[in-house]
Length: 304
Image 1: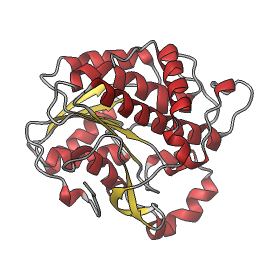
Image 2: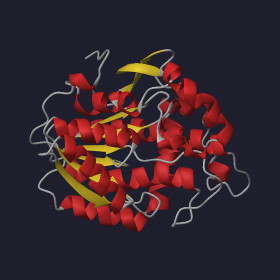
Image 3: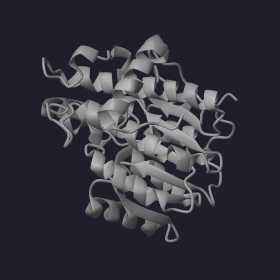
Image 4: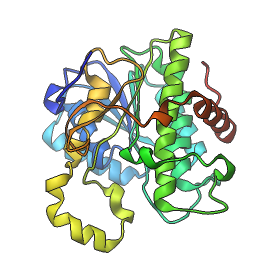
C-alpha cells in the first residue's frame, strides 16, 4: 500500500491497543505518545527519568484527562535496565507496538554503563536488546509492529567493525551516522528473519527529517543561536517530526520492511510517506555480521 501525506490527523482509532514508546517524555516520543493517547491507546512511556516522565504524562492528561499512560523505567545505556523494563512490559496483558524512538546525538566520547561507545550503545545495542527481549510478547499482539527510528544521517554512515567501541578514534558525527545505519541494518535483517519464520510481527523504520528537538542539545552553541530564528523554514516541529513514526505505527496495511520519512524538501520536512534508504542499509552481509556481533555484545539471543 502506498502511504502519502500522512499526518497526525490520519491516525485511526487505537482503542484496545498497547504501545511502548521509548524516550516518550520529550521530542518525537512525547509527540507520538500524545497522539496515540488521544486516539485511545494505552501508552507505556519508556523513560530514564521518572520525574520527567510524570511531568510529560501530566501534560498529556491536562489535554486528554482519560489518557491511559504508564511510566516504564528504561535506560538504553544500561542492559540491566533494559532487561528490567522488558520484564515489566511482559506483565502487561498485551503489547501491540514497540516504538524504538529514544536516542542520543553527537555527545563527547562517553561509554554506556556496560562499557560501549555511547551512541552505538544507546542508539543501536539498547534498541537491539529491548526488541529481542519483547519479540515473543509482540508476536501475540494485534497487528504487531516494531518501529526502529533511523535518520538521514545513515547515508554517511559506515560500520567500523574493526573499532566498534571507538577505542582508536572518535568522531561525534561519524559515530552518530554509524549508529543510524546500524538501526536500518537491524530493521532489514529483522524483517528478513520475521518473514522466514512466518511471524505476524511487522518490522519497519522511520526517520523524522530535520526536527526541532532536544536531540540537538550537543550541537555547538553558535549553531543553535544561528539557526534557531529561522528553524521553521527548514525544520519540522517535534509534532511534525513524529508523523513518520505515527505512519509506521498506525497506518493501515503497512508492510514489513518499509521505511517512512518526510515527503518534502529532500525528506527534510513535511507529511510522511515511504522513502528509500541508502543501498548499503539493505546489504545482507554487513547486516548478518552486525546481528551476530550485537547478540554477542548484549547477550540477547533472538528467538527467530
